[in-house]
Length: 184
Image (cartoon, rainbow, N blue to C red; front, top):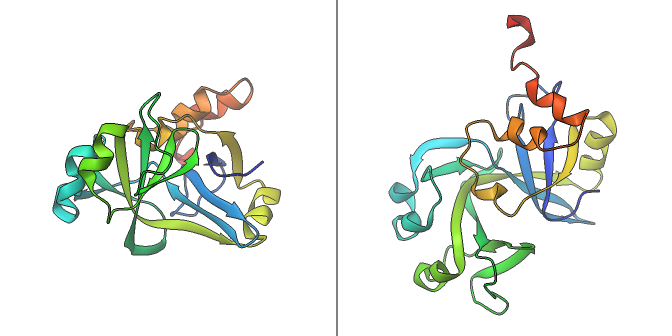
């Protein structure tokens, strides 16, 4: 079920523009609600233009990603920590799940750099109040899947299809679902 480090993959019939064909990485899930970021919505804004100190650590494409419709004026940052690197007690890094950590953008990038494979910075986030996400799951709006530690850094053009493709049958067949049925 849903926990930090899981992916919410939008169902093929979820056509609301903010979440159509999206992959949401869950950062927090507790009694207060759920918080995550959309992994597959790059913006046209370069990380260098808004947070130049972090630009070198940003995974390609080095763009700010649209993390969701809530608080687009705030930034959240995820990092994938290098295999074998210990980051317990390192200021500025808080484990989300496995090798994925939340990065405090007020921390020193030079201290974080040796520990991470890369970072991804998100403007805004997706949030659900207590019970709201469960209602959406009951309606079939989302498919809950396990994330790979590299998913937050994925620069693939169609991460939605890529995540579905790596699932067992019959779920993997959804990856071939056309973007616009009316054009098929």
